[in-house]
Length: 261
Image: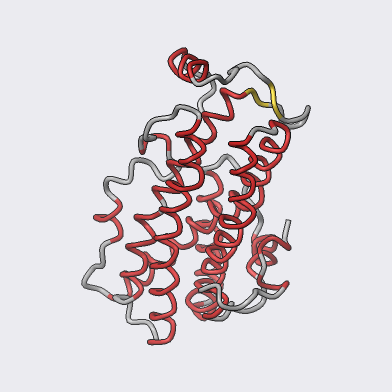
């Protein structure tokens, strides 16, 4: 989120009937309406940008010489996630942002960057092993971003919406509860599936690399890094099922990321 809201932004809010200086939230998470507008811009841009890397991860899964069951599971999970990320960016955070006077947020506001080189970075290579390692590194990084969003950013947005008590915020809060959080929880399960299916069988060195990739993703949202034992608790003791990844079966407590703080 930008530290200083531009006068143009403040004017746009005022033109729509919003007081940009009205403070919402509480002492621990106070933010004015202008700051909330900026936060929505970042969230909309980031969720939308998540569509591209997950699209390419789905295709990498088919080019990594993985067992057919794992390859097909990851293809289905990432393909579905790609569509859901676009919906979060456009239909959830984007709608709230546009309702407050926003224009299409640029990629520079996304934690993923502008995404212009995603295809070149994640397009399958000739070497299946290299594809598998690229898949694992990227899955770890995206998992790090998603765990922070699920456990820190979404609760923050929900709290701000509750304090604001505005129709736009109340609708956003409902969308977060009914749509975004359940889908994002399953996206985090994919991060766990990669860990147990691809990383653990390769041994300790690869586990350390996955932890580093996850923490790299967390750092993109200025979240503190976690020690290996902390992350392993979040990763659970076994892989989620394909049905859980696709939302056809409720995750157990051991595989529900909302159970781990």
